[in-house]
Length: 405
Image (tube, rainbow, N blue to C red; front, side):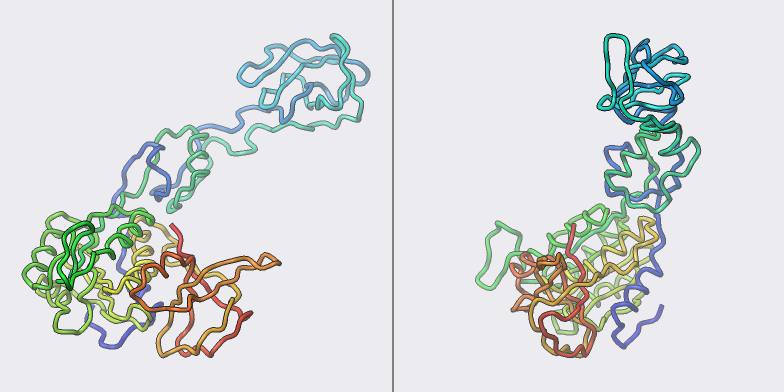
């Protein structure tokens, strides 16, 4: 794709990124312990019926609903150790929750409604047929699709797969994402700093976003503002065969912003490099061969916001998630006045609370400077405002994007 010299809207940029992200990249079979938060690569079919036979939903007595009068208790059925005989007319079987319903019985009298005297039991309330019985297959049946391809697996999903007799699952391989920070001013945490240097911190939020989205994160560290060093780092990413290279910083138009030039010298096919958003206007997207390139701005908040909006969906798309580009915003109420919006779509850091009626209240942080780590750390969401939004007051309806793992 040729370069677009005009800034794209956020929606246009996301669509352009996802249009070139085809997933899953590969499929691997993984044990259940490694499946949480991963993406299912094929439809999953049940290997058994659950429950395999009628079970009791309560502690009590299995019997025939048509029987009247005192019944003779002839045995016991417990979970994992059912009653082998037949429950005939005038008979009952002591039964416990999860135990198989004996042959011949069609209902369970709960023990709170039973009167027991030795080997005799009598119902103290009417007994309806099928009461307190879990029929065979009410959860799922053998051969039935229980989880669809592209589903991001929750703990409940993994438990469902286990109950359907799967010890491992076909998963989308984790996209391998390399992260490269640039800037003469950067030094690693704990390292000795010069008088004009700062601690490199942006990579840590981006690496965390990658892990949260289901990717494999590879830290390339930081380079100085030298073209040859940046090119060498790009070469290391290509040699490692990563799926995505994320650069941080150097994406703007200043004399020291060398990343775009280094990427071009390495053969990048540029898709776009500016998005009409605040924070985060300078954003690079392109490809070097099969490797996707996403260049994030260097300001801490800009890098994190762009990572949240563009990098997370990219990783999920590469994992085969059909909902990767779905709108993740939700409605809320403004907790404080909002200024008139500027010419770009804005993402304001905000705290969340619940009002007396249980509605979400989002309050924009008073200082929205894009260099403030602490303000970002103290925020739970972004208030999303369209370009040119009118000034707002407390109580107005707003749209928010939660900052979640």
